[in-house]
Image (cartoon, rainbow, N blue to C red):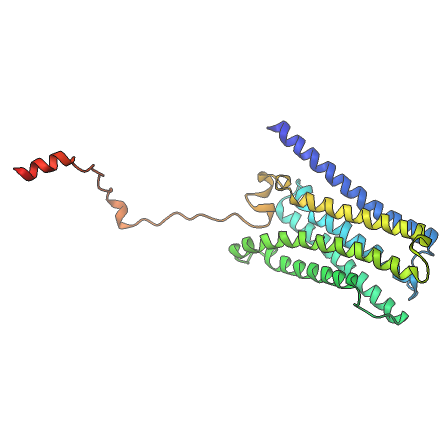
Length: 276
């Protein structure tokens, strides 16, 4: 049994390490591309400001969101109250960065006289950030405070877990549609193959981010990679206390034993008694 658990935990750390590598690689390749081939980052209301948007969104909605989602499965040396606070802090930072990334692109569109919210990417991205904000505040209000009814916590927890996977699916759609939008806007009168390195770098970053999201979804999907029962204190993922069972109050019937269950007399005996 111990050997099986050790192998299972080793498999978890392999997938977790793969997610870290993919997330860091997607950030590094984009930063190197922007700094060495595309004039870098700056708050100048021009293309260098727009470059902040994809960088911040990948950092917040892929890397940090993944770290926050996995806190209960990675941090097993702390009790559930401290892990819950750590989960909240990481998710809060990710949400602030995501909102900043959205505001950045709106300011850029305003100065460039571009339209807003007219592409599928903008719709997916806005829905993703709005869903993330809704889940963050609902989770903080229902799961964080001890005064909330335990039945409500248990009912909301399943929705909270599903919401994490749904948000990750929307993140994947936003990343892919964002890469397509960026390449399309950069084409102008050029053909796709004329973009060469630019298109290749964006495709690699988008594909790497997508694989990281899929890997993260698998890490969250595996129920056998949750916290151990000793760390959870009898609660699922350390969020909700176990349901209490109260002893039944004694009644008057408890003072009298139930009557014995005698078998019915045989039919032959019954017929003989009737003939007498």
